[in-house]
Length: 216
Image 1 (tube, rainbow, N blue to C red):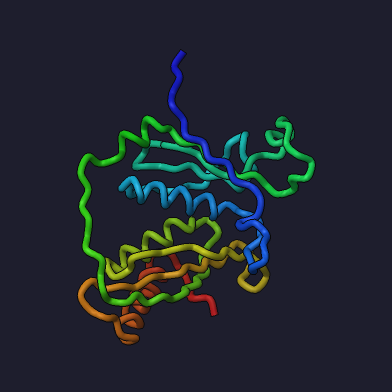
Image 2: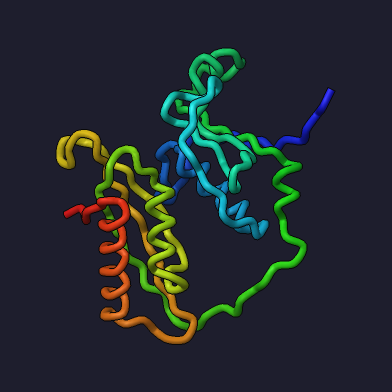
């Protein structure tokens, strides 16, 4: 039999343990797992990973994604299907959903570059800004993030999705995606005017390519 190597990750429970200091006790979700995987790929210097919505019998419908490099699938992630969860001897006190990911370890190791380039740390401060746009339901969050990066260029050092909203306020068949953008130039301190110009260019391109509108 062919026994491939696999890397598995399982998450459940609150983001922090209760203590005498205030802590985030909300349950870990899909994006916590996605963030861990993204950090793993970046740490290994593997870029261009795409998360694409997927259907799989082991995962909850609508809460599953496969990880792709080009046309090759290297893994799958999501929330375990209730039927799968019921087959395991889990504590009855465990009420939160279980998130899981499984990666093809051999394929993953094969993507790690032999050599990598490092850049000096910039001494200029970053500018953080939140951007929420409304798009059609069929447009994935990853496509929007990729277009933001492409349009912003090297000044956009991070694009992180932190909120997804559906409701009557934005209409049927539409969703709101909120991103936290980090602007940082390697050679100067960005002014408010610099950031406003980049933001305007990003919004114009999002509207042109994806029909996105700024959420008021």
